[in-house]
Length: 172
Image (cartoon, rainbow, N blue to C red; front, side, top):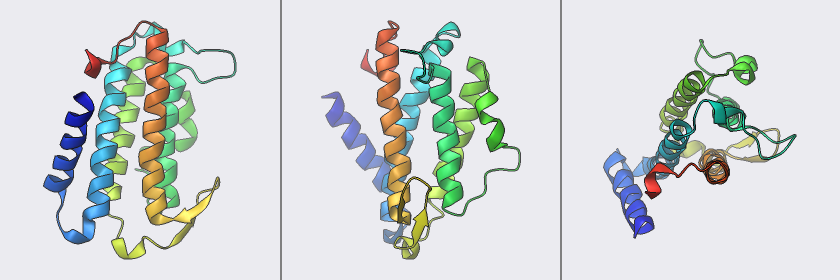
């Protein structure tokens, strides 16, 4: 039932946020990404400050590092698509951000940035090839990669939460 509600909500947001038929793909990707981002932020807020240093094993990102990885990837993918990060964002320093409050703030800022940039991608440019470093794909694929990457790490953070006795807030 919750999945059905989530899917209907995403569809409703897609329709509501649709400015023109030309932006259907962007509006749909934005709506799904926004939903994933919201749940990642809820998880980030549900972890205690101490749990931000928890990692499942040596060599694997901690909770805080995983959240900052999402923030960095948001900027990285957008940059590869031609959107420079805001002037106050030093991408090389993102890995040095610590503390629950600072991490959540940085993540929220990167989330807002990519949501804005998604709507600036012109549908006519979807087939343009982009070298993302890890793969070459078209711009539409880049938008889908943004969406998928956030979803992938939402799953990671759900596993981290369950391992730490944290219940994802939307599943209560």
